Image (tube, rainbow, N blue to C red):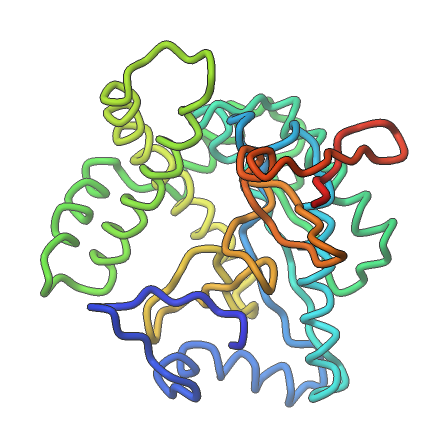
Length: 302
């Protein structure tokens, strides 16, 4: 809970301890404890690098991902000090789910997923593991995987639009408010990712396109969430997005210092302390670009 991210309502955020925030998750945690097993968490994250070159260094994981993965593993290790069996986080990479909508190449998603697994192995991050769409729908092409996911777990976009519309009302249900909040957040991300040097559309055209694509991303994301809930019902659900008090998901940071996700930014070393920023922000500070042992751009140093 120290690293949770909360969506405030009218500027108010609940204080800890908060019984409402604990309630949706405590039974799963208690069940694990009674069985003497690690507490299991599931986190849809690490989809693949943003297609916007002003945010990231390339298409493969770099120090930003390594830093966040170590942070999550250390978080699990810290739980061992309180509860010896500790905790485990299953990272469900969702890049394959909506890569075609947000402008990411499937080949880049494959390479990104493999490198995330390699980092976990290389750094001995034993409290982390991964799951992705490829592992479930083996032997199919990627478009067929995505279509099967929607056929089994998806909802019509018309229904999503109605939820988003209702969610703008102050007295809307929690589910509708969450749909509206998610739509706004994803539209913002899609808009930002499309703003890069060389693109020819106006800001107004990009905004309209982002609003249309956002519904497709939400439809796929919700289908992925439904699949995860069915596959891993005993896991406590984490999210990279802010969550409201008492929500079924716990919003969580991927680093102690920054709200930026590693696939939307770069690592910046400031006197030995790492933070995550967007690439153009590091360059504006005239930070030095550092390559890894293979000569690939890895992070910035100030």
